[in-house]
Amino acid sequence: LEKEQGQGIYRLPQDKVATDSLKRLELEYDLRKALEREEFELYYQPQYDIQNNRLIGMEALIRWQHPKQGMVSPGEFIPLAEETGLIVPIGDWVLRTACSQNKKWQDEGLPALTVSVNLSLRQFQKHNLIGDIVKTLKETGLHPRYLELEITESMAMDNIEQVIRKLNELKDLGVRISMDDFGTGYSSLQYLKKIPIHKLKIDQSFIRDITKDPDNAAIVSTILAMANHLRLEVVAEGVETTEDLQFLLNKECRHAQGYFFSRPLPKEQFKQLIH
Ligand code: C2E
Ligand code: MG
Ligand code: MG
Ligand code: MG
Image (cartoon, rainbow, N blue to C red):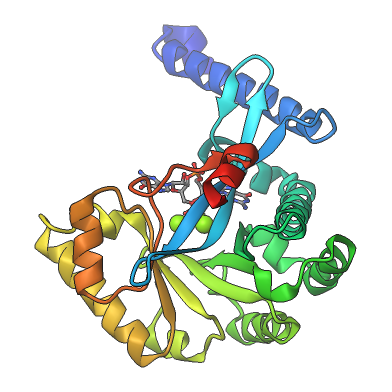
């Protein structure tokens, strides 16, 4: 600041820092209000069994309809929610809404599907995570087998013994667990062998250009072979083209999700899709 006053050289970056942090503060303030103002909404993106051409489930993805800024993407506000701790009540809302919506569709006679919910680090580390999930399942009436929780490699990295214990408790509840964005973290094979999960979701960065990028093709083939040996299911994320799909079919990948099938949809539209 002294230098700034003396020479004026740092004024521009300082001003930028100031506007950025002001924007951030505003966003944080709005985020605090967003739950009570009911500005969040869940979108649902279908997941398919591509070998049998069947819809098997959907991933719940949060959307924030900001009163002035319009739709704010989760990529922008989830990290902020995580830093401020707001992710805990938001995450509770997501879990409850996804479970109750899924149960509602089942009660309406639609085919039973699994709903996948993304867990944040703070949510996963919560002491009463198991209790919260039991309570939510009980209150919404959703059978545990129709709930899948998505964690990421980084979330499951520190204190491995404790993480394994927690995942086993979840597994015992009958809830399914998948490893999201797989391949972008630092899981060792040793660790993958030990950790009780059902499913790997291959990160979309590996699916992109899979037919043009031999490295990606090799990585995906290797993940599929390894998962098969470890008896883990696999979902390919970010499938956008017929070529991507054909590649995955040839490699005997079972499940896929991506714009090729559908973008995430608001609940009314998703219901029409199930019909
Ligand atoms: P994610 O869990 O890996 O979700 C997949 C993201 O990829 C979604 O972005 C989805 O819209 C997008 N996507 C799906 N298919 C395609 C495709 O074919 N091509 C491309 N380019 N993108 C595709 P979205 O909805 O913006 O979410 C971004 C991330 O924000 C999620 O990544 C997840 O980490 C986080 N997130 C979203 N909803 C929640 C939530 O309710 N709770 C928490 N904790 N995190 C969430
Ligand atoms: Mg996910
Ligand atoms: Mg993710
Ligand atoms: Mg992902």
